[in-house]
Image (cartoon, rainbow, N blue to C red; front, top):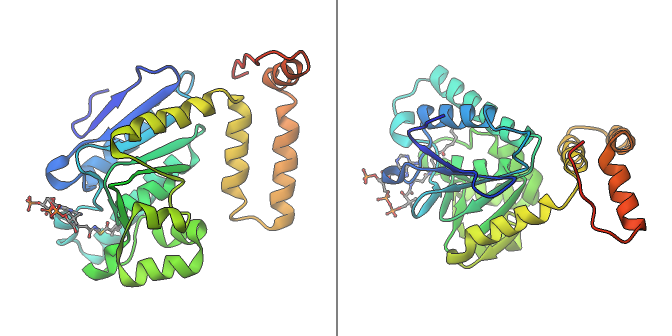
Length: 259
Ligand code: CO8
């Protein structure tokens, strides 16, 4: 499919790279771009794609939701926009394959929230992150109050959200907001390297592990453990479990078939 504001690259086996491309407004998310991301996610061919990498074109990952569009919204329109953005980001979070955010620059407001919906965040040393919504008279609206708190804990989430301050990649690393900080010129290489290391794992096992980790946020300890027990047992119904364990015992490299 062709998109006006998205570019994609599937030239590396198993890896899809999605670049959000509206550099004149630092890739700010309006309804059209969100709609394109929504459609893109729906159309990923999960029979071949095993990892999705999301990045932004130019000096920004995503500089937030589109302030020009939001400035004219009514209360109801604000609600619908918040709901739609949250729905699209939830889709990313729930995608059956791991999603890596390669944060090349500004990841602010809705941009930080997009990164938070990804499974792993790798930041360029030029990246900066923050939730500056309170400086605009609003709060994070694409599920940032929820996910930022889950990822960095209440103290740092409240500090970032109440002050609206922008932090640089090294400080984001210190609070666990990003997994790694790398030089700008190797950001995509590092994201691809991370993707390739996921590609060596059994795909169904990775999918089940992602489900367990995502869902344990909303479950009681007992239910989260029980969910893990169930998905663990489901792995034994896969060919890849037999392949992985046999290969180990025979001192060979496993050849996973995603079955
Ligand atoms: N929305 C719309 N346009 C933007 C945005 C944005 N979020 N960010 C940048 N732009 C535009 C600028 O207006 C400018 O346009 P123009 O050239 O026409 O003047 C262009 O992009 C380039 O920006 P700057 O000249 O400002 O570039 P700088 O390098 O000087 O500064 C910054 C970069 C620091 C990123 C600066 O642009 C900035 O502060 N941007 C706004 C960041 C921000 O506040 N983001 C949060 C927005 S709120 C949000 O995301 C809420 C999410 C939840 C929504 C809930 C729905 C109800």
